[in-house]
Image (cartoon, rainbow, N blue to C red; front, top):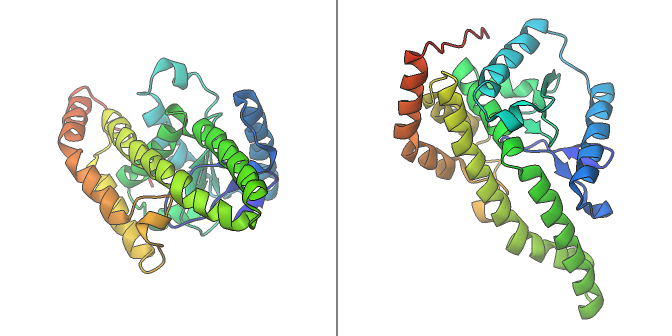
Length: 255
């Protein structure tokens, strides 16, 4: 994990979202947004930015194509996409519309459609308010941990583990699934072939083979679970894709 201040870019075998550290028990949206701004600037100062300008332009092209089809409220956010020079397979979003793409993601997202699946997922985390929800739930979870530790006289880390497994992780899996499906709609409306999402997760499964925890102990759905959900949602996504193509939406984003 690369930790910068109180926000962390979690490097995992999949696509994640910025997580707010629970030590401060942040619950105010303004506090979370302020922390996110500080940490984004800190990340750009301390984590190497990929110097390949064509790669930066490519990621921006895909992201901007998707941002063109989201609702006006979120479209007005100060969006920014930066590719960082890191071999980890990951991308992340913060509540202010800042998207970090680690260069390792291109090992599995090797077409514009597959990158659109990644960025559509991350943009969805922001538009669905997932970062705020996680920050608030994390604060409540920490309060339960502290109260339980005092009342029961047992070690705090044991209670924290139980609270995480019983409360927090299922909540995060639900959010990841929502972001998958909303991202699928976004990419299709932008003119990217939603079938690219299936190939992305197949590539992800190959890249992370043998390195995933059991699904009930993971904050992300298993690759098989999320691929099956995407396949079930493919028919309406293809309908949106065909409409976008007929309307002349043909994103010209070159890898």
